[in-house]
Amino acid sequence: MKKKLFFASVLIAGSLTAQITQDDRLIIPKGTWTVGGNLSFNTISNTSENEPFTSETDVTGVSFLPNLGYAVGENTILGLRPGYRYQESENTVFEDSMPSNSRTTESHALSIASYLRRFFPLNKNLALYLQGELGYEHVRGESASDNDSLSQTESTTDTFFIGVRPGITYFVSKAFALEAGIGALQYQRSDSELTDSDGTVLSTGDSNRFDFDLDTSQIFFGLSYYF
Image (cartoon, rainbow, N blue to C red; front, top):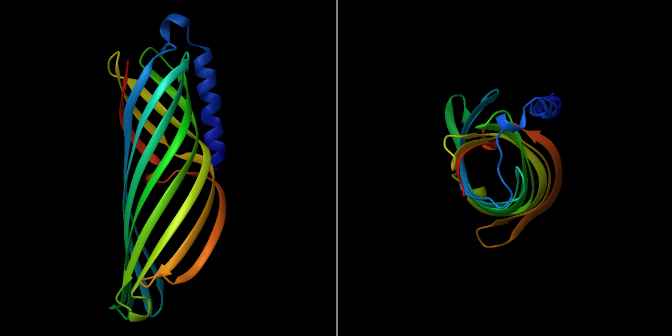
């Protein structure tokens, strides 16, 4: 269903753009530079029950994605986007309403991606856009538990990704624009490793994933400067 909504929005953007005259549409000239950044903040709480156990999980995350781009053609930006992401989660298991185990995990991620963004003007100040991305992310995490058998572990994950991100841009002035990225249709290839506090490898793994994410971690708000 999410993929159908994604492709429907692309068709609507193309249809609306075709109806706008040259004088009424937003134009970003070839040779324009842009610098800016996007910020995302998300919180997730989840509770599951399997008598006599109850599990409660709270997740908090923040992402910052600065960017630098250059207009290689009218309304077409080619750019570079480094990024940083932090996430902290706490899982507590209750047995008959009494805490029996608690685990806290935090992770830091660094990423770098190239992107190509195409704008679809709706008027002189407002435009939808599609942004293709190709990049890499490295994540390092630490997890600690009050259970002695799994007291502390460390993990690393390396991910290569390619995808498309839809969004919207509104120019509040000739140079400054408010932007929002909404979801991501992408393919990811990941390799991971889990070790204990002594550096002993506990497990390794790899995964392939293709989907359309529309959760709060994939909704970004930002400000860009065009010059």
